[in-house]
Image 1: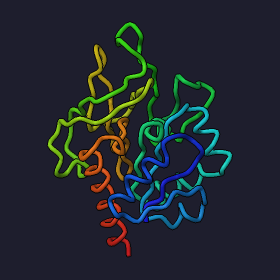
Image 2 (image 1 turned 120 degrees about the vertical axis):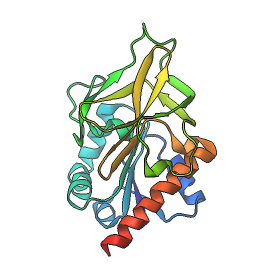
Image 3 (image 1 turned 180 degrees about the horizontal axis):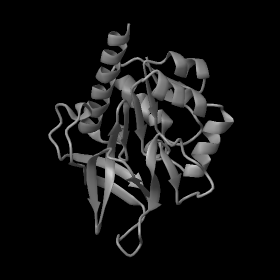
Image 4 (image 1 turned 135 degrees about the vertical axis):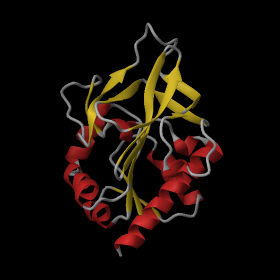
Length: 211
């Protein structure tokens, strides 16, 4: 079972519907026991960094997430805000500490380098390294983006970058059993569904190997 963490931010329903469409066992939940029993975890979201961390903390989910990822080594996928929350800090809310699973910072697009904020619409992810979540996808391929902030890792986790006007930013990362994507696979048509299907296969393989 894949558990999508319900922490009171936007877009949770869309990712839930996309995965159910693929006929994959999935649950949207904020219960700690569900996170502990999950075979794989997705942290999606649209919203502000500070609000996202506050909601996770108020639901006492930070500890269980870190235990599932770091101790139990469960496959974990962060999407959009969920990717950004993996990082140490954000310019959006300097007083909020992120999950700190990836050393790095979330930064706002520089208005002098881009024509419009947010970066919104279809764009490429240009691969730096191949990855199992892109199996069967002809890269670079279009994904759908909506965001005003981007991640700047301080460690070698970048799998793909995206060019927006005069800026190039990391849009796809992996660190061991942790993946993150700035784009929205649930809004990225056939390519995005294929990406989510690949994640479900990673979860199944990990579950079978540990049983």
